[in-house]
Amino acid sequence: MAAPGPPTPPDVPMPLPEPNPLPELIRLKRDGGRLDEADVRGFVRAVVDGRAQGAQIGAMLMAIRLRGMDTEETAALTRALAESGQQLEWPEAWQGQIVDKHSTGGVGDKVSLVLAPALAACGCKVPMISGRGLGHTGGTLDKLESIPGFTAIQSPEQMRRLLEQVGCCIVGQSKKLVPADGILYAARDVTATVDSLPLITASILSKKSVERLSALVVDVKFGEAAVLPSQAQARELAAALVGVGTGLGLRVAAALTAMDNPLGRSVGHTLEVEEALLCLDGAGPPDLRDLVTRLGGALLWLNRQVETQAKGAAWVAATLDDGSARGRFEQMLEAQGVDPGLARALCSGTPARRRELLPRARQQEELCAPADGTVELLRALPLAQVLRDLGAGRNRAGQSIRPGVGAELLVGVGQRLRRGAPWVRVHLDGPALSIPQRRILQGALVLSDRAPFAAPSPFAELVLPPTGGPTDTQK
Ligand code: URA
Image (tube, rainbow, N blue to C red; front, side, top):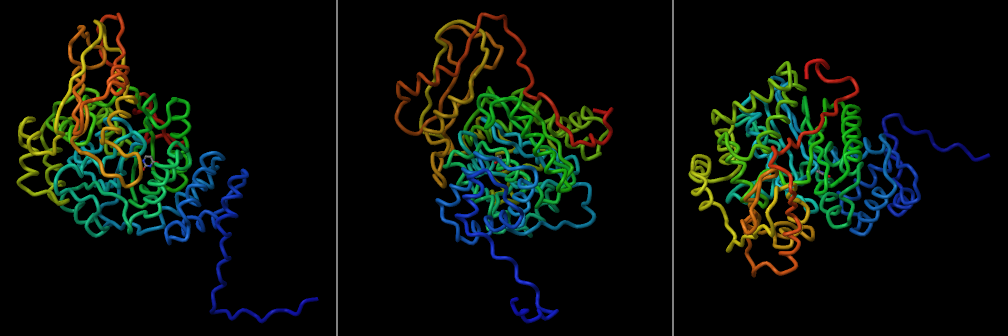
C-alpha cells in the first residue's frame, strides 16, 4: 500500500489539472470525441498566449468543422472565447436598454451601419462588436474604416463613453475584447472552416455575451451567397444560436433572411457607406430599408419596448425619416475619430458630394444586358467573387483591401431590361476587366420572360427562444 502523501494545507488552493497537450485535444476531436470544458479552455488559452502553432489552430478548426460540437461543447467554446478578454460593465441605469444585432455575413449587407444609430435614436444603447470580411462576404468594420479617420479599435472605457455620448458604437474585437475570437476568425477565413455551425455560433455569441445585452437579434442569411446556402442549414444555425444563447442567459432571436441577390444596389466598401447614408436620409433601396426596419422592429419587441414588431419597425422607420438616426451616425463617426467637418459633410451632403469625400476607384466599366428580359436574379456570389479578386475582399488573412472597388447595380430584381442597356457599373483600380471576369459577371444577371414584378422582402421568418417572445400573440 502506498504511503499517504502529505496533507494539503487548507489555505493553499488545489492546483488546476494540467490541460491535455494540444495534439491530444486535436486527436480527440478528429476522432469524433467530445471536448470537455477544461479541454476547450486549454485550447483557447493556448491560442491566446501563443503556445498554439498556426498548424495546430487550423487542425483543430478543421476537426471541429468536420466532427461538429454538441450544445455543451459549443456553450463551453462560447464562454472560453468570451472570457479570453475583458467583460464590459455598464451603469445600473442602462439595464434593459442594451441591445444589438449581428449578421452571419452577406453581400452588400450594410444594415449595421444604419441600424445601430437608428436604435440609439430609439433610446437604446448599442455596443456593437462587429467583424471584418469573412470569405466572400464584406465586413462592417472594413466598410466603416473606408471613411478616413474612423477608428474601430476602442477600449472598454472608450466604448462606455461612446454609449454615454452617442448611444451607439461599432467596434472590432481587440487584444482586450474577445482576443481569441479575433485569432480564430482570421484563421477560419483561410482554412475553409468558415461554414461551421458551432464555430459561427461561438464566434457570434462570445462577442455578444461580453456586451451584457438585454436583447439580441441575429440575422442568419441563407441562399447562394450566404455562408450556409440552404434554409434548412440556416434554421439549424438559428436554433443553435437561440438555444446556446438562451442557455447563457441572453434573450436572443434569429431572423432568417434571403441572400441570393446582394442587399441594396451597391457592393464594396465606400459604395456601401454611400448607400447606408441614403437609407439614413430616409431614401435608398426598398430591400435595405425593409430589412433595417424589420430587424429593428423585432429587436425593440424582443426587448419589450413596443407591443408588436410592426410598431417597432414603424419607430425605426421614423428615425430614418426624421433624420435622428443620421444625426446619431454623424456623432458616432466623430466620436470614433472622423474629422467633425468630414462627418458633417458626409451626413448632410448630396450623394455626389459624398462620393467626392470618400476614396474612389480609378475607373468604372459598365456591362450591358445580352437580351431583353425581366430581372429574376442578380446573383450575389459570382459578383462578390469577382469583386474580391479585384481587391474589394481578402484572399488571405490581414491582406489590405481597396475601399473604392465595388459594383453598382443599375437595375433591381423584377424590373424589365432591354438588350444593350447597362445593368451594372463596376468600380475598379487595376486594368480593365478580363474576358473571364466579364463572363462570370454576365452570369450573375438572370433574365426571364415573366412580366415585371415587385421584388420580395428578404425577411423570411423569426426563430424565437423556446419560451417564445415577450407575448407570443403580439408579433
Ligand atoms: N459573424 C461572426 O462574428 N462570426 C462568424 O463566424 C460569422 C459572422
